[in-house]
Image (cartoon, rainbow, N blue to C red; front, side, top):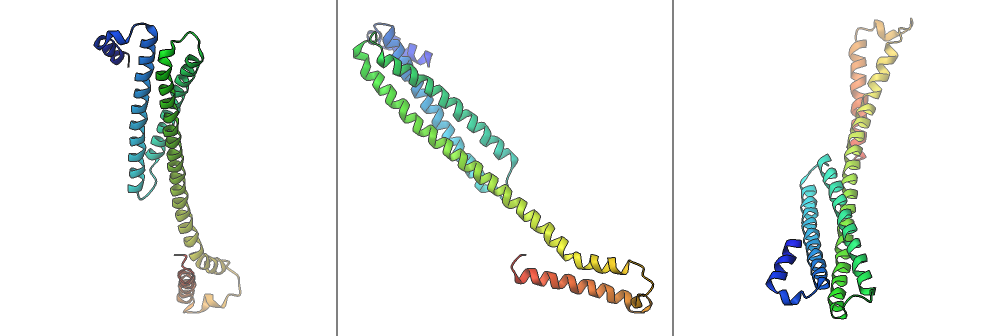
Length: 204
């Protein structure tokens, strides 16, 4: 921004008769630069949103990028706040030339408009973060659901196997020739019944 202001001074030296004119020109250039940075950051947020839409499952890299963009927007916000304080004090100063006050007023208006874009950027990043965490919760719920279903399906066979593994003296099925196939069939039937129940309830 300093180099750009220097170019403006050499292009039109009459417009920069004193240091006040140079200072205002620097502030104008810096505000324009901040606007460009905010625009670039907005494009990055938009691209990140499209990236999240393309992912079928949440990616940890996306969360890192969200955090980085949040830090960047916070730095931009602090920079704009500092400029707002400077310009506000300049407007209140009696030493500042009155002919430059309209330009300063325009600068402060531009700064205030930047805050709207910054706020919008924060809101979009918070939305993306909430969306990401929601995707993570959905993914975890699916995994938990799978483990729960598997555990319940194998619960009846485990119970039957535990009963016949107690080695009691009086267990008629132990001496029955069809005892083993009967136990296996019983396990399959109970597991199948659980599966059918889950499908009927649309839990699978």
